[in-house]
Length: 320
Figure 1 (spheres, rainbow, N blue to C red):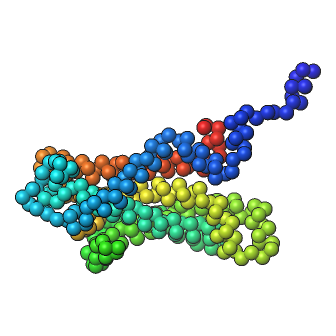
Figure 2 (tube, rainbow, N blue to C red):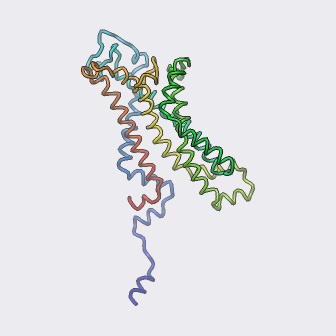
């Protein structure tokens, strides 16, 4: 009898559970993210790196980063040159600032191209289905078989020197920057397209989508206004982690001498200049600071991406 009475009693939520239930979905996402220690650590480091390259550009001009004086070549860190100087006497501190702008610019723009293609193709394939889905998915599978790094090396070698330098917002970018952004973006969208397609397939049969169809809402409005907002979690996580991948890939290619070309500096081609044995042995500051910035940036972005992935997962409430 006591057991039956106990079973009949309503379950009372504890105070933390009541707080969670009263929060909006956005508030829950923010709460999960802010409680993710690694993500918050990564966010602090990422903000610090961004402030370093943004504020630093107001202190040092691009002309200063390219100014060389062979009389002070390979000088160790000092009060005048905190990061030392390179083989032709350029200040490494100012070069890491402007090189970081290029590396992050390539990462963010390449991911914008990736997200644009991946989201559009995945949404169209999942929503319309049929032969449209079959054709787009076969194209996606074919693109997955193309080795990205090999294609990037070939295209950078073939087109990098043929495209003239571009001046934008007072900065001069070598044509290789455009090639790298396009190749990275156009060869990275396939995984996101498949994720978006699977999300759309599960969403398009829900009641609110069927109701929108019933009242005659155009298909493109249903996709843009109703389906894509419900796939933002996948898009945001892919965007975050894609930036780190793009930065690393650009560093690989630039390190091989086929990426960003002079006069444009990047963290990757700074390492190319420092790869000689004598420089690595006798001037460790030459490669240490660009390497450290690449490490901190990629690591912090990965931490933030992991935190966003957990924040958008409702099941993570049980872990917080």
